[in-house]
Image 1 (tube, one colour):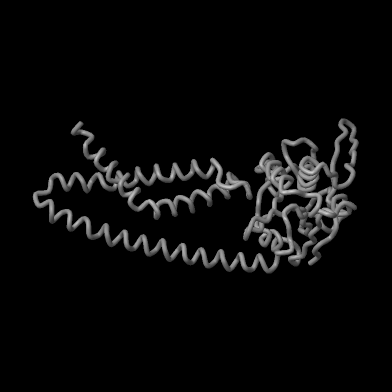
Image 2 (cartoon, rainbow, N blue to C red):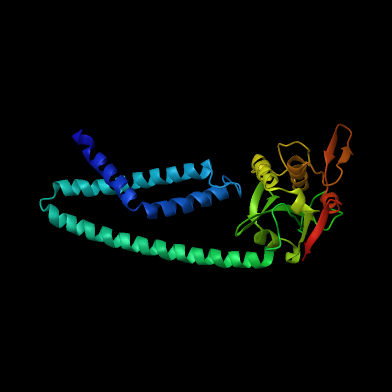
Length: 287
């Protein structure tokens, strides 16, 4: 038991330190977890804090606990062998207190700056995109080599998701993913876009429909982009994703599917222009 006493002691002290300064550690854990969760799309927009982020937080605490244990172990060894333990504690504790003060101040400053930046961005988004609603379809022009859009100006489509101050858009680039609406607009030609909405959407779309839309998104998030324009659900291209979301959530078909025949196969596809020109949609914004 003596052989592992230092390790056990350092582990206990590390755990206590994490508990005592838990609000700091938890703040960092939340920040790290959400960053990774959104980067790897473990938290689809609008469905809250999921298992993906929870696992990342547990891993964060585990790594923090292990790192602190390794750092504290040598200090405990020196303390045990020290003749003047009070002097040693004083010398070793003062730097730790100063370091804690620096960490707390840095964390406070970083969070304050981040909150101010988020508030400023939210204010800009509110001013520019307050007219948008969840379920609105956004069309833009981008430089894109796509057989489905070669004859159509607006060749990129996304669907808006608005949750409080968060203005996000679901699109398919290399995979089905969320981006901020601002970032999406800025990636288009001259920052121009057209927003379309289902006719009589306020009466047709209920809060339950929006919840079902979010569930459908969850089934498709992270799917790879379909360069072959195949109609299977394994991969998705932009107009296919939008058409299927509306059909499966609201039982509304945004245009008639095209039947493409080749020598060996016959497949279905949907063009962005077909959705854009659907009589079930009305234009709400053109910039």
